[in-house]
Length: 507
Ligand SMILES: Nc1ncnc2c1ncn2[C@@H]1O[C@H](COP(=O)(O)OP(=O)(O)O)[C@@H](O)[C@H]1O
Ligand SMILES: [Mg+2]
Image (tube, rainbow, N blue to C red; front, top):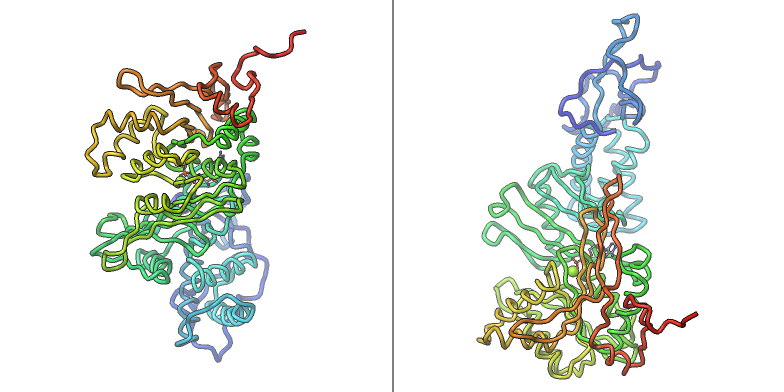
């Protein structure tokens, strides 16, 4: 049970069973760490440290019926207080272990290291004289290990497969995204310096650094997770870390169908579009599932095609035989040597690609991509940040202008209309569900505007009492103009996919 109040009201405890005093340190050992309990220890903490009543039960009444004044009064510690004490204790044990290791403080995970740490931990824990439940001793040991060899308090969040993002807003507020919902986690750092130490641990092996002069950095964890860190003076409330965890098992189209993110019909339609070499743009907000969908679409590419993928930070996982993966490169410490997505797009054209898959278009590379699409590199796929298909067109115009090529907007617009065949809109709904909210055909230009025709759409019908949206994905009843292209590639989709009965056998 988590109590949020800063100071818990003193609660009367039932008298403790006569238990032996907490294991006192043997005479020979030096005095305990500063974080340890004071020498004149009060009655030992209850065996299970969380002295609060189990969740669901009301708190103990303020006094026993006979008002037994002699019963010892113990301040009930909230979970947060216990966690804070444990954090302090873990850091003091870490300091002692590090001091005991001397010069060879660089630890590599191995069974021997584990054994050695267990012994030293046991020694220093006993010295600290802070009895904890067995469960919490185990947790404390994990905290110590994470501090020595992992990413400190964040490690347990990174290890949790249900958590997809970790957001550290200064030492005391760590948010996570778990199963699509963002929540404040119970984990904290000890101080700004503690967060800085972990940032340093992340970026040091990459030869990068962050300081007051240039207080931000992008990096990657060894498992591929993407990290951004920004520190004071630019981050006003303390060092801030944002981690997008690398999902080892990317979702497949079957998962998306199971989650209700797309229907079987939509998946079949999208597969036909990819196989028929349509140029497709996935549009959506941050964290809406663009990369996941791009991964699904890329896996629809036939096995024989040579694919070149271009990403800021390699996320795509293609189960395909003929793939060349390219990744952009940030500038070196002296500011030179940056290789942008744009450079890679231009280079990829000389690599005889049959498919170019660009992780995300964020700037001038959009124009290069459009030109590639218009010059025989059909079947290319990318994502971009926009909230509706119409927005996606506007975004492509703006990003093309960032290329520095001084093209008039109507020229850019007609390039977009000619290049892009389909926009697939991905949306994270307010209840956390992620869905393909629209599949829209780009039909061409008419009177200076790009003509869009929606083929599938999302109908929001209402909300359940738990706040979950009731939404239906359905065809609009319009058959796309590119149907003949699909047919030329052998995809004769039944009219029912598009929402009409024509062609169904009559009874
Ligand atoms: N359709 C979906 N249903 C449930 N979770 C999803 C879905 N699509 C993506 N996710 C999850 O959402 C998170 C963000 O997805 P990602 O594809 O990286 O988003 P984006 O590229 O738009 O920022 C990931 O953890 C991913 O596993
Ligand atoms: Mg992405």
